Amino acid sequence: MADIVRIVLSMLIPPLGVFFKVGLGMHFWINILLTIFGYVPGLVHAIWVVATRDQF
Image 1: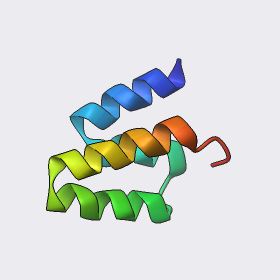
Image 2: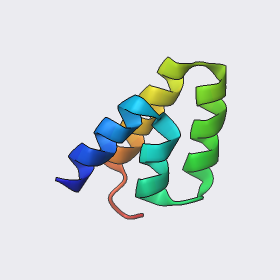
Image 3: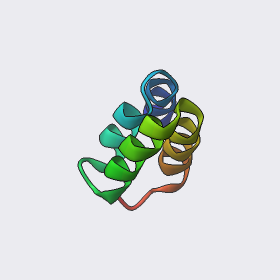
Image 4: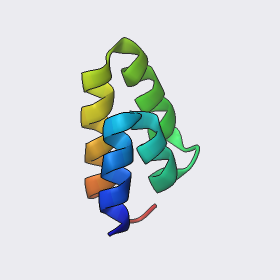
């Protein structure tokens, strides 16, 4: 259930979903850069992080 909430947050603001999954780690900053370059790259990265990162 929590991952669904994170995915919805990622669809609205991609770095927010990543932040709630990994905190201020490397993936958060990568996502900030990708989102600055374009919404779609940030969105894809955010959903990938939320869906695959179980050990953070």
